Amino acid sequence: MDSLKLAQLRFFCAVMEAGSVVVASRRLNCVASNVTARLRELEQSVGQPLFLREKGRLVETPSGRAFYAQAREVVQKASALEHFFKPDVPRGVLRLGALDVALQHFLPQCLPSFMQTFPDVELTVLKRASYTLEQMLMERAVDLALTDGPIQHPLLESRLVFTECLRLVAPAQIASPGDIDWANTDVLLFNSDCFYRSVFEAWMQKNGVVPRRVQTIESYHVIFACVRAGLGVCCCPDVMLPAAHAHGLHAMTPPDLPEAPVYSVWRRDGVTPLLMRFVDYLGTPAE
Image (cartoon, rainbow, N blue to C red; front, side):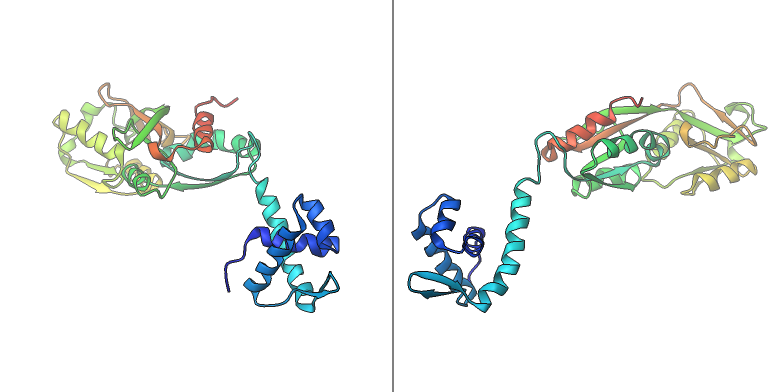
């Protein structure tokens, strides 16, 4: 069977609904011979006679009536698709990857209003670590990442969204970083694909801090419970601290511990109006 053409289906449905080639050609604003030619092509494609020719008129066959029920649905859906994208009405599917710090506070503030304002935009939101997000952008697994930055890469572009403060968190009885017995203290951090881990490891190296060991625990709830129990210290963004962090914990901010800016990051060759509208929206302060 040859490939069907949408124009053939439109002409066929028009004839079925108008009852004649002449009337259908007027509605389609074309000559009758063109309609007749498209009908013959369609019959050749499907391998079935859709009309009987009787004294200059067409009479639909049983096959033609059955085929019309299906063809009409295709034509109607095609017509709807022609108006799928409306001017200045964003529509599409955006895949967003985000750090847990963005999912904890920032995105809950802005995503609900975006979804209400643009109901035709479908969002897929995934939580991933910093370096994983960069890799997903490179592989086009996500359209946009909310991650640490700025990212210096010829294929990527970024824009600052918000800045987080990093805290050194210790048991409540520790008054200052100088009170920590590092040689007998564990540092509890996320895995090596976490930007905050690399920042804190660089801080320790800069300050000549050598802990007993660095343990990998990918849960702030578990990390805080361990710190509260006196089993070590950790570094985390301020927003990830529990609301009652003063209970059993002491959050400190060493003056040379860097801040943690979070950026919207996307591929330069993946820019679309919908993507940039979303990026602009993320940069608009929530009311």
